[in-house]
Image (cartoon, rainbow, N blue to C red; front, top):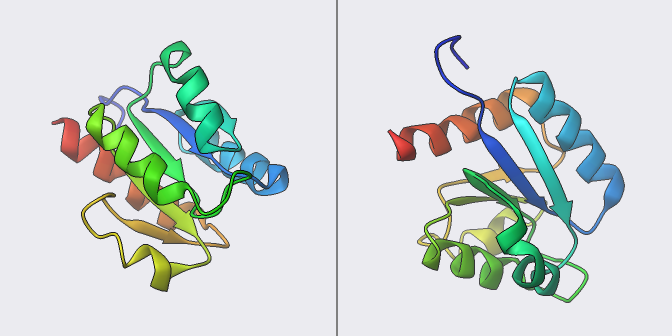
Length: 124
């Protein structure tokens, strides 16, 4: 992130809290704002209006099933871009129009930095 760019506000849909904590730390190390994590598509629909976000990271499998693709589509309908963060890249590739990219787990700082810049480029 260059020093003239405001931080991005990122929401994470992830059912594994350890992974969510790891990605939260990476987001903050990159100078962005981690606005929170939700563990299901149901939770996203219930709590969406309480967040101001620039983009969302979305796992494929959430606590309410394989609902990540539906969540990404729902976010896209509301003008919020997303990126899949998953160990299931083959499955993510079945939904190329829903997200800007796919980041493979385990998540590295470099992959996350590159992914988050896609949110910025989309907003530019």
